[in-house]
Amino acid sequence: MAKITFITRNGEKITVEGNDGSLMELAKQNNIKGIDGDCGGVCSCATCHVHVDPAYFEKTGTASEIENDMLELDDNVGEYSRLSCQIPVSDALDGLVLQVAN
Amino acid sequence: MKKSDLPDPFEHARLEKGHGHFNDQDDAVTMLLRLKDVRKTAKDWETFQSGAAPGRIVVPSEVSIRDTRQIPFEVDPPMHTDYRALVEAWFKRPDEEEYREKLAKIINELVDEMLTRDSVEVVEEFSLKLQSRALTLLLNIPYDESEIWISWGTHVFRSEDSPVDGKKAAILYDYIDEQIDRAIENPGDDLYSVLLASEIEGRKMTKEEVKGVMILTFAGGRDTVINAVTNSIAYLADHPASLARLHNEPEITTRAVEELIRYFSPLTHMGRVATKDTEVCEHAVKANTRVSLCWASANRDAATFNNPNEIDLDRKMNPHVGFGFGIHKCLGATHARQILRILLGILAERVGSIDILDYEENIEDWEEFQRKVGYNNIKVKFNAKN
Image 1 (tube, chains in turn yellow, cyan):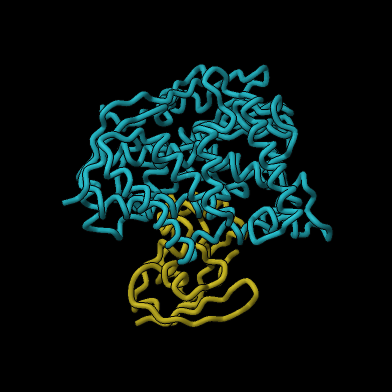
Image 2: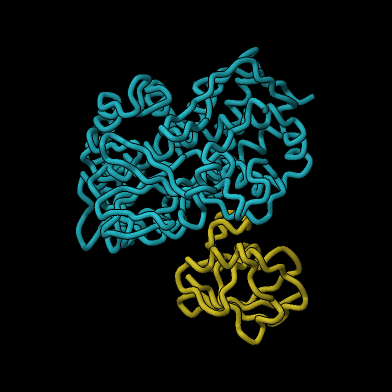
């Protein structure tokens, strides 16, 4: 079980718990504002863009080339940007803090 | 080649030069064919605008048959941002459970009817009916209204002999005018009334603006949904193993829909007008000339997609542009995705196999490229699951 904290654009902090699936799916299950996941997680819509807390970036890993191509053209992209549909939830991510990008 | 295959006519030009040329009613279009160029250009709305003369970004151009600006589609920021924000929540309603249940009822009833027949012409008798009946949900109006739209036939403003037919377009535009007047007289909780009550820049939306949103909603979701539904049925007829998989592993449905959208690319391309002299893909683009974002070609770009000409229901990374890209990405995508997800689920549950009896392909003519986008008609037999 991993505790994950999402910080939305209006500064709301929501901590949720998850075991499996992707961070996007976890956010959708918990109605996190700004994570739409329109395409269901195939890296095509970029509506699940988050900024990973730098302290955790090693654990989430960096984006693949295809993901980067999507992020590059998205609004509010930064050094620690990821598409949350591409990050699997695992115990290793316990304590993770994510800023919702849009 | 299977009957349901949609060949990629753009491959050679995409690899060799990255663009194509289509001389449309003396307003030529440079078609951009590579995924990265298409995305970059779609993103750069300042250089490649949508807010040109109404109808001009559509290919073939509708400048000669339409004065009403489609909203938010033919508007650039900052106004686009306000319009889009105004309609976004309404067009997300298809994700709600109640909406999905109503959609499932519509599709189940249609499938009931199809299973009793020896032969079904899918375009007119299935896809057009499904598209029209589902649209009553998106507009939140009585189901019976769909009978009128079904009676218009498959193309709202495409006739047999001309790609752009003013007389056919007038049927839709006059109808929408009447409906707006009806909503003014007798407001309800339908999309017309909601738009008429909406405020933009601190004032009420005008009739012309409401008409612009409604034309977009009708026209943008007609041929596209019809092609996507028809092509899905042809695909399942040709690939019974996929139908069985969708039944045994319903969790793959969402991914399958994205893959079908990538492969079918129901809208071949959409234009933009350059606001200054610029360059795309080492090709000079003059100010006030048109380029098009060729979604159909970009979705077969082997630089991003492995085996791009295969439908792979397990494709996990699928950054397709079947619903466009950037600020103007398809407003009706939520509705379209739910139609296809629910349709695949119901067919997998109730249909054991589909036989293709006869068909005539719909081939678009873009001079340099001939693209199969679907079928003019396709007769099938739906066989119930035992």
